[in-house]
Structure formats: C-alpha cells, structure tokens
Length: 146
Image 1 (cartoon, rainbow, N blue to C red):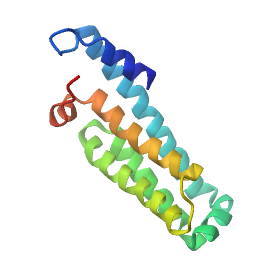
Image 2: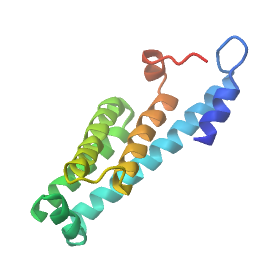
Image 3: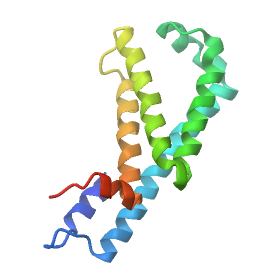
Image 4: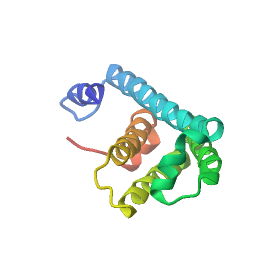
C-alpha cells in the first residue's frame, strides 16, 4: 500500500501519471495481485490437502467438515480466474464474494472484527487494488481524481 501512495504522489499537475508512474503502478498491481493469488492458492491447498487441520474452525462456524474440499475448490477457481488477465475481473468479483461469505459466516457466529474477518477484508480490498493498478480498463471504469 505504500507503493500505491507513492504512485499517487507521482501524479503530474495535469492529473495524469507520467509513463514512469504508469509502469510503477502496473508493477505494483502485479505484486499486489500475486499476493492475493498466493493467499487463495494456500487457502485452496489447505482445503484440498490438509482438510483435517480445519476441523475445529468448521465445527465452530457450524459447517460440516466434509465441505472443506469444496471450499478449497472454490478458492482455487477464484485464484485461477483472478490470475488470468482475460478473466481477472470476474475473478475479482468471485474472490470478493467468497471472502464476503467468510466474513458473514463469522458475523453469524458472533465474531465481530475477528482476525479472519480482517484478513478477508484486507485480501478483498487488495484484490481490487491490484486489479485497479494493473488493468487500465478498470481504471477507466472507476476513475479516482485527486
């Protein structure tokens, strides 16, 4: 996020980025996006290959532990769609929906501002920030003027 602030500070007086600023912004978006994809792939790996480690969490939220592999597959699909440039927007939408569901699950069991909720919120914001920085089409849809 510090990189994002640096990029915003490099905006010229005309309100546009220099070519150097655009390059920095795209690379910042790629790095942020790579971290989001890494998070989703680790989550998918855990759900698919280490489901037994999530038994206590699943019990605490009221979900049967046999759903962990399905949740892992959903995380994998979200990560793959987000990583592919042609499907990155639908990947971001699905990722934020997936993470929003996780946040709602914790609200349902009375956990407010719990660490999993905060992590999901940060990853969801990072997914859109990374996409915004790396994809000019998204920047055109949501122009931020400073």
